[in-house]
Amino acid sequence: MQEKLQTRAFEQVAGMLQPGEQPLVGARALVGKFDSSRFGAVVKQAVLVEAGGALGAAIASGSSKQFFVLTTHRMIFMSQTFMGGPGKRIIGEVPRAAIGVAEIKMGTVSLVRLAFGPNGDGVALTFPRIDKKNAQQLADALQQQSPVA
Image (cartoon, rainbow, N blue to C red):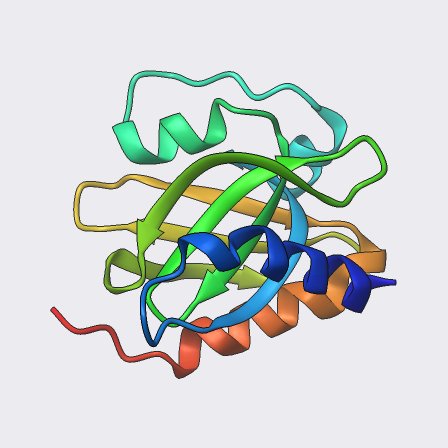
C-alpha cells in the first residue's frame, strides 16, 4: 500500500522537478511545529502556530496531515487526501541543504524533527506505528545526505 502512495506522490511532483532531481522518499505524516511532542501531535489534530520561524510555521499551518516527498534537491510538502494519499496542493518546499535532522525517535509513534537553517525554524514529523518504516526511510535518507553549505 505504501509503495502505491509513494509512486503516486512521485507522479504528483514529477512536473516540478528540476533536471537531474530524483525523488527518494515519499510518505504521509502529521506535521507539527518544531517543538511539538510525539503524543501531542497525534492527539491534537489541529496545529496551532505561534510566532516563530516563517518557513516552518507556513508548512505547519497548512493541515497537520500532510504528504511529503524528499528529493535529491529539496523536500516538498503537499496536502493529503481524505484516504491518506498525496494531494495535488503543494504546501511548501525546503532546499535539501537547509534541512538538518535535529532528533529521531522510533517507537509506537515515531518522530523525525527537522531543523530548517540556523534560525530555529523547523517542523516535527510524527508517524503512527503503521508508518514507522517510512520514518526510518526518511531518517536514513537525510542522514546519508551531506548538505552543501
